[in-house]
Structures are given as structure tokens and as C-alpha cells.
Image (cartoon, rainbow, N blue to C red; front, side):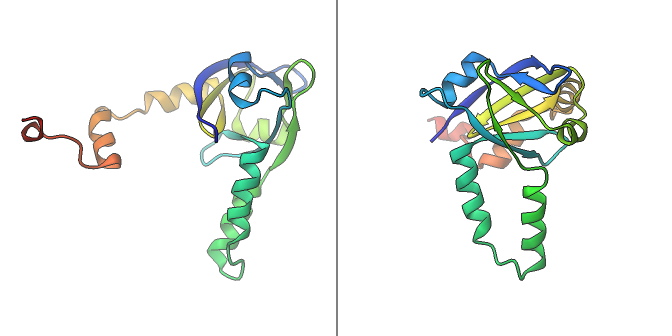
Length: 155
């Protein structure tokens, strides 16, 4: 089970390769094998999954009844652009051009790691997303996580 964390700014080279930060690589594996799957994210970004996480997610998807239209759509959307990536000896991964174009990535990339996945964002799009942060994050957190403590609970 992974508990990936961190924000990492990287550059993509002319061939579409990104060097994965050492701190992030240490969170993923200790045996030196770095295999991932990448696909389109929910917004205009990409998601990198360690290979074993991808296998778990695809097992869940494979349980869906494909005779139900919404299920077929979810499966199709999840798998669009899915590509196996293996880091080279320099800890770089090669992102396919169609995915680079989808995410609007030019030179600067932000890797945002959380839970068991890594989002890849064009730095400009990531900054726009951050600027769209709610004014009162506390209210949003309370709505999502529920309850919390009221002043009367402190006594």
C-alpha cells in the first residue's frame, strides 16, 4: 500500500521524457524497478500509477457489467490513453505525445503525488487549479469529511 506525498516541479525534454525526482522514487520502490501505467486524468492532466496499483484498479473495472451503457463509458474513459511506462537507467519516463498534448504540457511539469497515484500537470494549468482554491477550505473540508468539532464538543 502506497502513501505517496509531495509536489515536484520537473521539466520535460524535447523527446517527451521526465526525470522522476529521487524523493518520489524512494516512496515507490526499494528494489529499483520503476514500472508505471499512465492515462488521462479527470481534468486536463495525466495520472501515473505504479504497476501494482494499476492492476488493482483494472481488476475493479473488470468487475463492471459492460452490458450497462454507463459502465462501458466508464471503462472506455478510464482506459483512454493508457500506456505502460518503464523508467530508464536515468530514472526518466517517456510520456506519449498524444498524452502530452491532452495535458497541455510544454516544458514545465508539476508532479502531485498523493495516496497511490501521481498527477502530472502542465505547470501553468496546475497554478490555475491552485488559484481556483475555495475561499474557505475549512468549510469544504467540513462538508467532505463531515461533523468535526463544535465549540460545545470542546468541554
